Length: 254
Length: 270
Image (tube, rainbow over all chains, first blue to last red; front, top):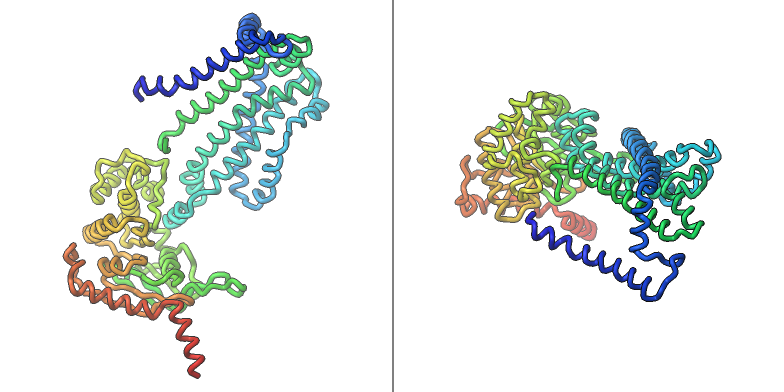
């Protein structure tokens, strides 16, 4: 792509973003809004840099929880989707459950999990992220493995190909884009789940707990600074999933 | 030895249930080596079913199907035929070259041998520069030529085609028909070809098999005497139109509404 077109593409959202922040700043200053109601962006940025090392530590804690859950959930989800595509009757049993679990806010389970482990354990949070990611990956990858074009299957049968060959040469490559679609949803969801899990007690070392702590002590700008950190962490995960996709996917339509 | 022999073959789906469909009943058909035979008939006449019985993608309810003097099942295991469908059915994640290599991979050929054959096949279908491209970068006609190259990559003696040009525009379609005849002549491949189009069947075939629906059976087999070498002039030849008329008349008797109408009239007359 030529440089000018890229700039042309980036400029409008960038201008909009800057204008939005300026308007926010102007509103806070102009109406003299109190910091406990709404903090000004300049104050938030100030707090962000002042607390940079602490935000970084908290991000590392929440980020690690999210990453561990993301990896474990993805691996388990992929493994289970292979089992389901091999034994269709299991799919009919499990898919409705998986979909309904996806539809309800299962974070609340973390409260129960917290009771099962010691209060200083990160396991409940990681387990929660794993569970959320697992179902997203399972539903999508299982779809990719089973929803292959009938022409492709007939073609493979005409070559007298084994089920294993069909799996390797048709089903798995067909499921790859589905996996990345799942990861694009699961990566930000893993971060969100890691934060929200922190609201249900346990260790007070992650971004989520820091946000509640700062709000509780009326340090509104600092809370916003942690929110900003949380946004950055979510973006990092999302960007990673996109980079991973563009590296792995070569032949598909752009 | 006949390329295809279908003897007393029936295929009944959902036998014994309320949804029973007699797809084809008591069909006999012999296709000699080097022949080009088209199956034509209205939807539901079982022409695709017959093709899939020859391909052993379906098992007959009754009767025997043999290909190259073997059972259809053995012929499939030996990759004695190549198959092309209405959708080109290329794999988006494989380059054009790798698509053509697929049947050779499944036969366990080594990499250099596969690449060499893929290149030969690309020359055969006149798309030699396209090996590294992806299917979605090609037009529909080009994709279908790659599908033919793939079907013939292992040099099978028989090519089975299920409305392969059905999704193409008329101009591309006529070009593809010419190309198919050239390719089959160069490779001396026997073809069984399912189509909806009367001119297509006549232009391509040595014999046109006309089928009727419910239950599917062969009503007539029409010899097309247009000579071995067919050109664009063939489409204007008198014999071409004569054969088209013959096929059309055989088909007219098969139309479901017509059959029903005569049946009712039959009742009234009595």
